[in-house]
Picture 1 (cartoon, rainbow, N blue to C red):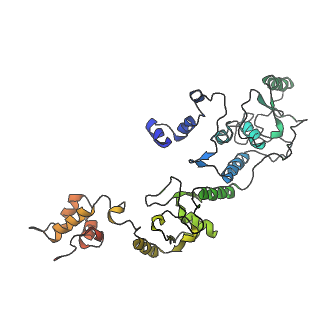
Picture 2: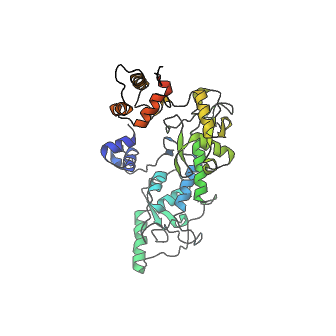
Picture 3: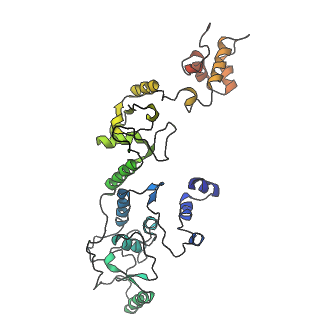
Length: 356
């Protein structure tokens, strides 16, 4: 049973079920109370790509105001004044939803937030600050002493940090860049991770993810669209195009193996063409869903249509009207008329005219 099915059965949100399954809530049931739990770098059942991880980190740092420079406080811009910042995305990446803990973890390139018996002190006494140079592990007693000192001095805001935390030899790990461009790079990397190209440049490259259209095409979110067929993504990525560039074109499969024609994402097997060319190509290779294989034709079987044709064109008595036949099977009159004349569902068999 999938998490989506569990959420529907319990009347809960998918995010709630996901947090429960991954041990981020009700931790005592998992035996992980007091421990940091992350998403493990797994997204949609597949390993997270480095490009997606970089985008996630850059999106976090985009919500931190670093305009004051390396020695100033870097406040979390989405929180309440003088309160700790909160980020659900940080929970998945580091095991903590506290923005300053996430900043400390990412800046130091740690796999997850430490399971401290200590606390993370703000040397600046400013709770929204996420500058790693202002964050230092310490004891609860040291943290309490910081608060009492601020209380005695009557300070409610930040103070100057005379001795900031030294910058590590490799520098702080601060991901940055245009989020839209980084997201596009992440989508491309996720596409390649969902395609099996182990057969080499001449073989078909099947889609290995679970997301799939009824016609066999894999799909994923790309360029703001939710269910883009994988072979269209393969074509635009290989040719440096966008989906808008091929909006009025069909992407045809020219695979030598018919078994992969709707599941191949090798750009060398794909060409742009018209709708008419695509339909003709499908008919030649038997991948055109006709009759009962078409989702609109599954309600009315070939045998039913053949029977209607026989009753209409070879009646044993008074010929039934098209209206009566349509009402009998609860189908539109125009559709039944085209069936009887052979204008559609010709493969169902039976007579399509008088004397046949």
